[in-house]
Image (cartoon, rainbow, N blue to C red; front, side, top):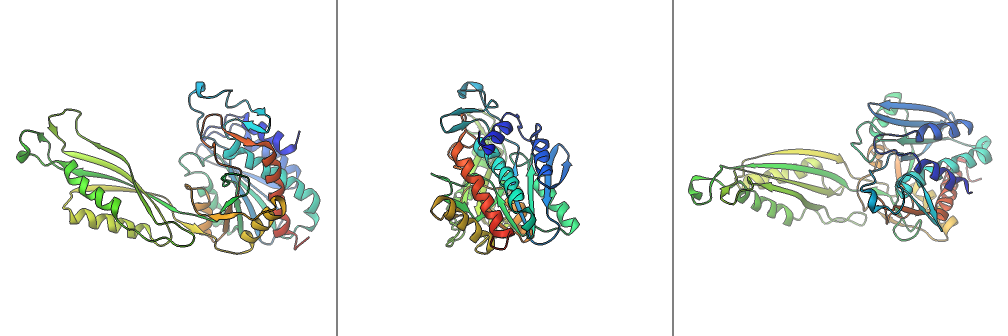
Length: 379
């Protein structure tokens, strides 16, 4: 069996529902140590993080990923046990096959081959960063590892994140940036009362609705060649006691903005505050910033990944900043060039998640080609 496929199956068989690593990282650590990597386990709270480096000096190329997966959901929705990998023709089925144990396996086997074939000529450093806290709170994973590296004065120059970036076929899309994500939880205050006596009450939901309507219709920015316009979406709305004859004294809404570098979190918060004041809304707002936008518009990494896709697939990928957030949001602010490349994302977080076994083999070849282009001076 192909080594990448075999490793992917071993990883899927470990039920590493976030933040539990379930033994994935020790398995990988042993293989990387055999390939000449210095391996550290950086555990913060309940989260395991693996930091492995080969080489002593020079620019640092890092491949980043996660060993944790989302819960599989109801067992009856799966045709097979989600943690017993199944091979159905070319389909490798199991939780994490696409997101992202397949990519992690491809990184490891690519690193093994690169070290075996080019280790003596390696110019620069090669690293793998793995966490068990990407699908969860994302507080004690890559974020904490980057803080630790910063305290050491160690900086990543180039980072390939193995998130499933492809849309229809492997390598058709790479992500060279991501939008920022800012969530607001607004609580509007009024006065509860009987619906038959509205003059004695102050309907908090009536107060809140015009604010939400204006924010939903607001033109935040026009986007640019790399980013779509900022999106404002209401995700939850709650009010009332459940009774038909009670005017709500409080109303709550949760909303999210996916925003481009044209906006800052402070500018967004200021706009929301101004709209609330304009409508005389008495409210409290809690904010949570999941990540700021980032973009790699050019440079050696983007060229190397695009050239490797061309060499291995016969075509160059489209560049995109779409999708949700990734751990790239913790790496890019340190000054690193960041590109995301991984398998087709059609079934991620779904029951019967699967990935093409052949694609994993090819993805490993692409990763190895990127290593060669950046760390061997053109060999």
